[in-house]
Length: 137
Image 1 (spheres, rainbow, N blue to C red):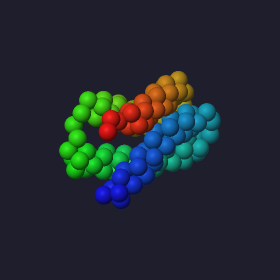
Image 2 (cartoon, helix red, strand yellow; image 1 turned 120 degrees about the horizontal axis):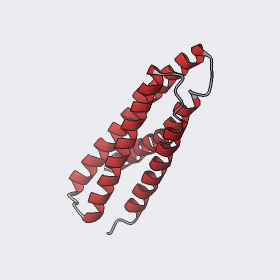
Image 3 (cartoon, helix red, strand yellow; image 1 turned 90 degrees about the vertical axis):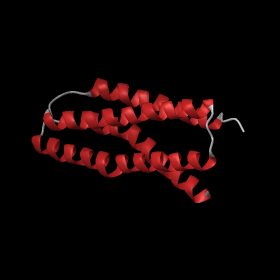
């Protein structure tokens, strides 16, 4: 089962990286006035969200679920960690909402929402890491 843990860690790293990158990518796409740039950037943003971030999230969540079902652990720290992961899933969904918003209204400024979302994702990723490292033996 070390390969399953490796898969989980790799998928989690990709997902967390995407959660940190997507708000910046979304915000960067609303700073130009060229219509062709908007269309190409919106396409790239959607591609990163649907073909990279979402599969990484599903793989991380699925492999993590298999890991804790295999080990049969159910403790307070696990409930807290899963709650934080659920909040990360909400951040992921909000990134999807922002992707749709900039596709529909390319001129719309979403820098404040992206900054808040990126900050929240950073806190949640740090909290998840802390909970994993603070796991009792």
